[in-house]
Length: 105
Image (cartoon, helix red, strand yellow):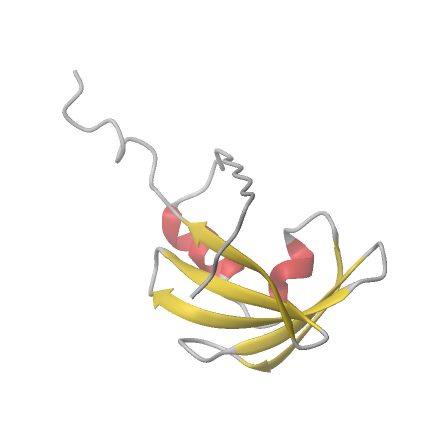
């Protein structure tokens, strides 16, 4: 579906239960509360595959985001387009602390 030449990855530890993090990142129009570069977020329809919203970044560019994969409680994948052109894919995942190193002791 997508053919990208470049990728970027970021990871953060958040001092909150996974359910609280999920409630924040899955809230319609809520990306402005946690994404440092997003100025505005308008949800057209939200919660599940096919959900859509529009994000406007502080630099003035706006993208339509469409959910292409939804994993209730743990993450989602987005297709971002600008002016009808495929631009990017974003994946958000929640991994509770300790889940990635279970059994390593």
